Image (cartoon, rainbow, N blue to C red; front, side, top):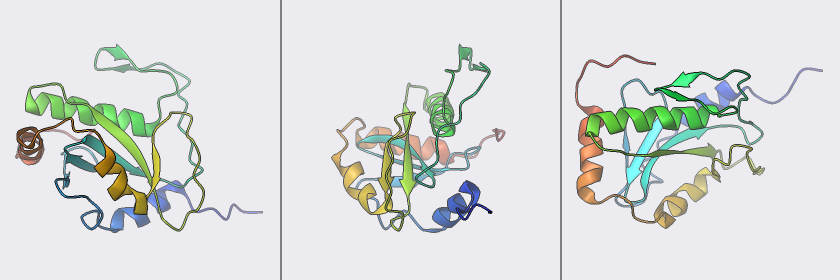
Length: 161
């Protein structure tokens, strides 16, 4: 019997179409980072990469260790964690200071199932995103948010990875 669950790629595609601007709290904004094909939001509570997934998606377990910027990648890192690490490295380089990006897995509101992920990445329904972001402790001032926005969108030679 064929699997009735849509592929994660299809779920990603459908959720990517919905704008985030209607659910971001005041002081938060979406930024684009060249080379990263995921939604990224920045605000007083930090920098987050949003990965849209089906509730049952699990982290990918890598059977091999691969180097990641001179540091050995942890076995079992999920795609969300690796993407957040990539964004952290790109933004830190562009802003010339350490900036940490954290992954969030965002589910469509119609999916009633919430599962704890093995990688401990927060999983939220879209309807909870506004409040969740608003509840984050303040880690960035307005100047840092503006720096991230300006540097992430500035034209520059950067290759996609």
